[in-house]
Image (cartoon, rainbow, N blue to C red; front, side, top):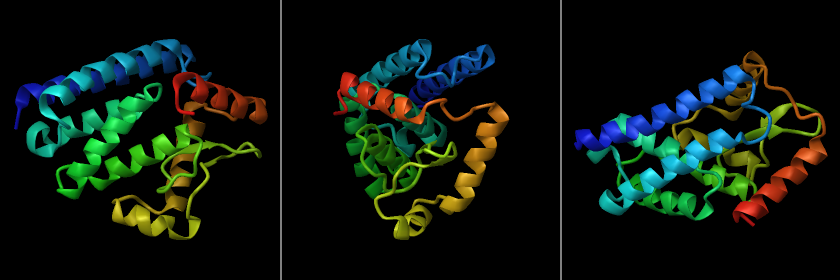
Length: 197
């Protein structure tokens, strides 16, 4: 294992978490995509991109479990960089097939990309506010098989996860957008602006 690489990846994750915490404390986290959060996500992604160029995807064998987890979080949060997220998914998929990256990493990043492309998700890992004001799984490709797919990826049943996500949102004071249609339009415009569509 490359200890230096693992530490570098953990530092990126810590930077992300600290920025999120600061924005949360300021009450600026849930009002759209905060400019400061996006800046950290992009900077972290550029750092990870350099790591990918030097080492390939940092799986468990070279970065340890913590390092691999941190790399995945950086990739997962780089939502304004479509080409980068797609590159990460391809690399993660190769190593998942070899057992060097947990399948849940591929599941989450697959759904994240599909959500950003405004396509139905596969594993039910992405949640958004619905028209009734409830935090619910984003549209599913195959609702009838989602729990089987989740189980294969080491994820809890979707009903359990939905209850957990709703509890956490309530505890954090996160609420439904005042105008659901306007939020959907903003998401579409953002997706086009950054290149998802």
